[in-house]
Image (cartoon, rainbow, N blue to C red; front, side, top):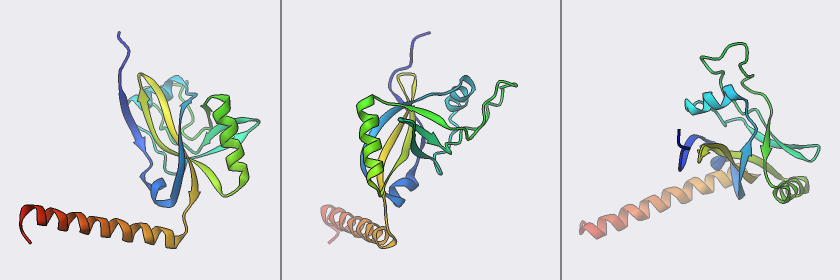
Length: 158
């Protein structure tokens, strides 16, 4: 059977872009069990409460919810177990030093299959304050109004 090509998105964390300012992004592999991969291929995962954390010089993803595989037996996995992130050593050191500086956290932004391998896009993020969120909403609304007005002018309505 030929290997898959391209990128197939499984889940994305849209709330992360609302709650955090994303400074950098990294693509990481993820250590999974067989039934987890089968569940992901069925398109089932939730990144809502997930976060990355360092332990013993390695990075782990906590609270990532991959539901049990329906056809699995006693070999099924725990849905919210801690999973190891697979990155290059240079990237691991960079992420660890940035998160230790303070105020920064690792947030999963999306999960996808890339050429048949399960990957997670990790964002190095800083939490937004309430007024930052309001400013972002106001900017998005004003940009939307500007684009509408430009569209109207292009059509000759005004």
